Image 1: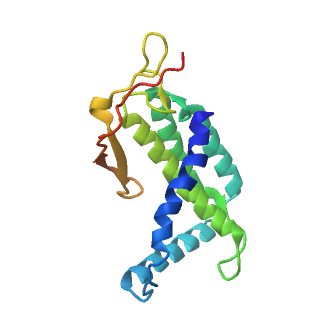
Image 2 (image 1 turned 90 degrees about the vertical axis):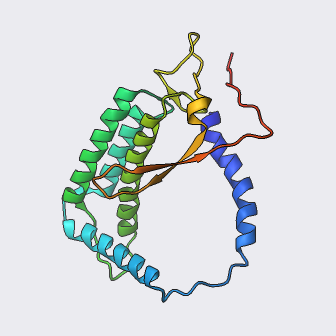
Length: 197
């Protein structure tokens, strides 16, 4: 439960202070070439999804992705399951772009398009979560790698090699993402393994 609750309680209190200072940011010129590029990329993604005209609903892909994540990339996970999940997600993505059905058009308010775009993003994120979990050969926080546990079943951390935040760079649909490490420096907190005994 702690792993589920932390995000709900910590994020609202921390991000609010950050956003409070951003409220004064003046409006940004949307005629810049970067805005036009982003708009064209989104339009292309929408047209690609609408043109598939497959046989399976967006919800069916969403449910299948959720089941893969639940079974293999949950709070307790292992390398074999994570590798299997990644392959399953890659196959699901290929099937999604081949057989998804998105009703309606892009000329009207269409929540089905929004849902399809969101599920396409979830598929990418799901695969990235598996990749990230595979690169961390430790158990830490709410994420338990079954291969990395103490004799009594407690999480086995490796702060010497994994005291960093993973920042992943998208490298194309069919390429591995690029890992950028943001080192964590602890000046006032001593790193300790949490014990539930």
